[in-house]
Image (cartoon, rainbow, N blue to C red):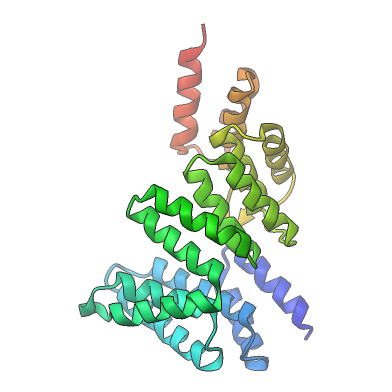
Amino acid sequence: EDAAARLQLMRLHGRFGEMEGVERLADEALARDPGDETTFLAKMAVANWRIQEASIFGKVDRAGEMVTLCDQRLTLNPDSSAALQCLAGFHSAMPETFGGDRAKGEQALQRLQTADPAAYHLFLAIRAEREEQTDLVRTHLDQAMPLLRTPREALRIATLRIALGDGPGAHAALDKAFALGWDDPILLFRRGEAAAVTGDRMAEGRQALLTLLAGSTWSSGTDHRPAAHWRLGMIAERQGDPVFAEAAYRRALTHDRGFDEAKKALKALKERKP
């Protein structure tokens, strides 16, 4: 079986949230090439999915299984960025009574700094965001940007920049992600989201959302169609086009009647009408 075809099929399963299919293909691929890091990332995605799907009492056990997976990975590849991030995150956040070990977390983080400097700064940026240290978030994102190696890292920077309201920074990270050749629909969605939230590069953001809606809107098991229409409405409002905005909000609700953000946007738009 062709490895490239298997990888493409695995990505398609992941895009539509079919994680059992991802796991089956990843296990087959790792049986042939245990050192493949891309396939290990797929296994990590499955492990995270299992944690999310587990009951509140089962989450700790699932997290322990993921840590075991990461420990095993480091015996094959001591510089595995994904495994080091996994261990740094688990041991930094999990109480000792549930298997956490702050010393192990710091050791993994120190090793990550050498193995993948961009991922190291992204890890610290995310931690700073949780602690509401906005200036420190910006500092680490600035340090990560020139070190980027993968489109996923660029996407994570873009997402954090959007949360900060930094349009130019978000679009610069997305430019990098597109340049690295990733074709996941989430990039088009984030392009539109960056424009809608910050008002920066709105024409480009609007076109990105229209392109997204003309094709597949699924990414990582989520259908972004309702949210894409909502963001289109936001851009249209910023551009002074309330008619298009209202239609976009209504289309969002057609796809998801319980979409609160679109409901609120539509109500607010109506209230502003003369």
